[in-house]
Length: 225
Picture 1: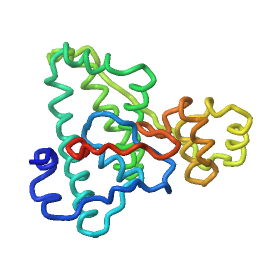
Picture 2: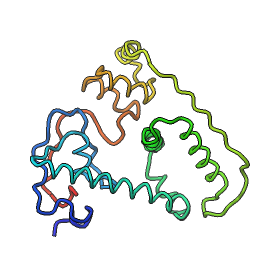
Picture 3: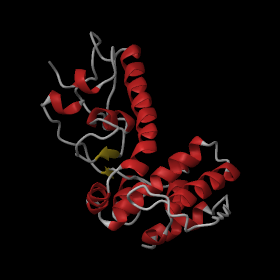
């Protein structure tokens, strides 16, 4: 039995045509080859625009699988932050280089902020609650009561000067841009594949992907799902 039947949600991708084998050359984003997490390798290719489906239902199933695994993954953090043992915490953190870990946590905050409808008041409230709990629980899950209060102030300056930011990229200052500034350039259509490649190692704008040519396909279908 294909491994996908064990990993996917019940009744998903059963008896339905899968993704076409050819990877699209339209996307400049390519997923990094690594083991599955919440997303399978095929999920990552789909999100990067590298998978085309000939049946609408197949694509709907793919999106449902991503959605439902993400929902349950978020629910798992209710257990992980409080119940994961200290040696396992250490192994998780040690698996990352400092910048990669910062990028992962930044992406989690960005996902949360967008999911909250960019409501800064609610975002601040959640960050305060999370920091308060983190400050008062030790790594073994015992309440320490050391922190009395946490205050988070969020001040966001919108409407960056796109032309000025792009000039900085052209002048070799792309490594000084924040992820939000790089994202603004991407949304404005200012960055081509060469620009993205030059920024690949300078910031966390696209965590878990790289810019460049098509990836070599893996014929091992068990790996995909």
